[in-house]
Length: 376
Image 1: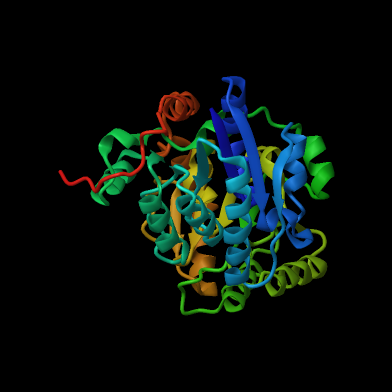
Image 2 (image 1 turned 90 degrees about the horizontal axis):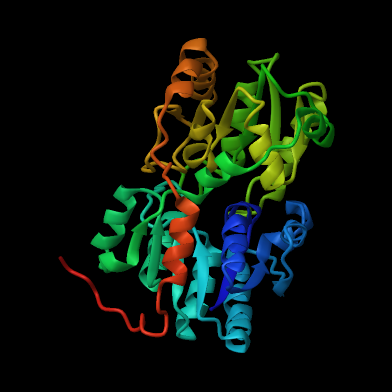
C-alpha cells in the first residue's frame, strides 16, 4: 500500500512520526509530504526533524504569507504532488487551515483521506470548523475518545469506518525514551525541576481579545511569580506569530535568570521536559490531550480549547491577568499537584498504535469512495 502522510507543523509530525515508522515497518510505502511551518526559520525549520527520524521527504512545499496564502499554496502544490504520486490514501491529522486545504486537494483527486483526531471541539479557534470540514472530506476516521467517535458518526460517517483508537500523543508520551535531565537542560540553557513550568500560548483566533493582548495578560500574570522559571515555546502561525515571538523574547531578555524561549523543542525534548516541570500552562491542545498522562497539572488559558474533553488535572481559567494569576496559584499547590498525579486521562487507550496501523492497512481504499451519508 502506498500511503502519503501530510505534515505542516512541528506538532503534527511529533504525533505522526511513530505511526509513519510503524506503517513502514509493516511493509507500506510511506511518502512524507511536508509543507508550511516546517520550512519557516521563525518556527525552527522543523523539516529537519523528519529527516532525523529517518524519513526522506517525498515533497517539500514551503509556503509563507497570510493563512489564506499558505492554504492556497498547499492546495495548489499538494494537488500537483498527489497527482504525480497517486497514493492509495493520505493521512491528515487534526484541524489546521493548511490541512483543510490538503484534504481538499486530495478530495479533488479522488484520493481517500484518513483523518486522525476528528470529532473534538475547540470553540475558541478557527480550527474547530476546519476539523469538522476535514471529517466530511475523509473516509476513514481514527478518533481519540469514544465520545468523539460518536460525534463523527452523528455527522453522517459510517460506524464501520470510525474507530476509537485513543490518542496517538498519549501512546507516544508513554512509550518514548526521554533524554537525560543534564542533556535537556544543556540544550535549552535553563534549569528545570521544582519551580519550573512549560508554556505554549497560541492565538485564540475566535476570541474578542487580540492575540497580543492575550499574551500581554499572561506575561503580566507571570510577573507576580518571580521565583517561577518558564520555558516558552513559539506560538503557531494561526495569525502573524512574529509580534508574539518578539514579546516572548523581550520577556526572556528582561528575565534572563528565569525565562528562555525555544522555537521548537521537538518531540523528544518536549516529552522529556514534561517529566521535569511542575505544570504546563497556555492554550495548546497538548496540555489537554497528552500532559495529563504525565501526572502534572495543566492551566488552560482562555477559550481556544473550550469544549474539548479534559481530565481533572486540567484547570480552565480566563484570559485576564487576575484570572491567570488565580489559576497559577491553584495549580501550583500541593493539593492540585496530588490531584494531577491521580488523574485518569480520557485520551488514554490500550494498543493505540496497533489499532491505527491495523485500521489503515486493513481498509480497502479502492472501494471506499464514493461514500454515503450514514443515518442511524
